[in-house]
Length: 345
Image 1 (cartoon, one colour):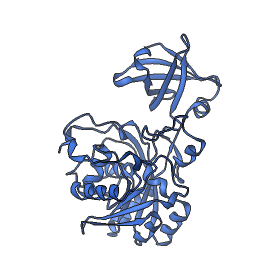
Image 2: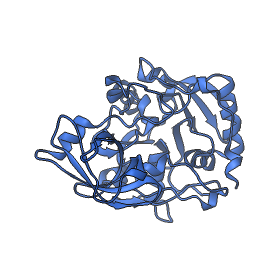
Image 3: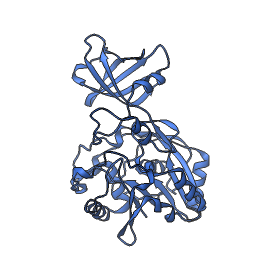
Image 4: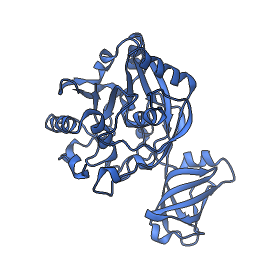
């Protein structure tokens, strides 16, 4: 299919710039694939869609402050780094600005700590391989000087706020390693999760560290030519067992977010059985893909012509999803990371 087939018009005013005061106060558009219909509800209604025996799967990755601002040691020129992936301990693939001025051997220092970075290799697209050193703890220094990696459509002229450190993180975040939040999980509160458990469903946690590929622009015209960058994931034996029990008992596996869906589908064999272990998700899901594990999907509203919208359209059907998106625009739902959500059943 053409990438342009996944376009829609979105007024800028509908792009959520701030989280709601209450996480679970967001609106929820429930899309029914069998009935080709939808209804306008609120996220607080989410537990009512959970049946006994269902497995609700969450991504417990934890966002770390991946945006750094430093200075070139020789010239004092400002340098911005966006950490994308740790290739070895202390060595990162990073998006650097201004890239044309940062060559191999360039040394970068950061204020108020002993953290230093040296460019080891120049890659395409403004990417660099950078090695970090510190007199103390590298992780502590990165936490100190790093900023929350908010998406560019969330405007913060003065930089991310203290509140963003909390709200751009799920309440169940545990394992540090993501450079973007699994945003469908931002709506959950401990109370909502308890309500789900009360309905005799399993609340299962897996980990997929959200990487740059999740929001990398699509630069091709044909969806089949786009490839989402690999992301590491982990599914332990207990989680795999709970998911497979739900499948075998003809209950549903409900994925919280596109990252969770990608990890589950990447882990599945031809029979749909989820395998435990550490692996890398290389799967790119576009319309025509046959889902083997996921039966329902909770997701936020995504950018036009994005790989995330491809996945949602593959699950819900392109025509139905785009009609639902147009309804969401007309009904003034809040879009993107801090926005409202959609439950596809």
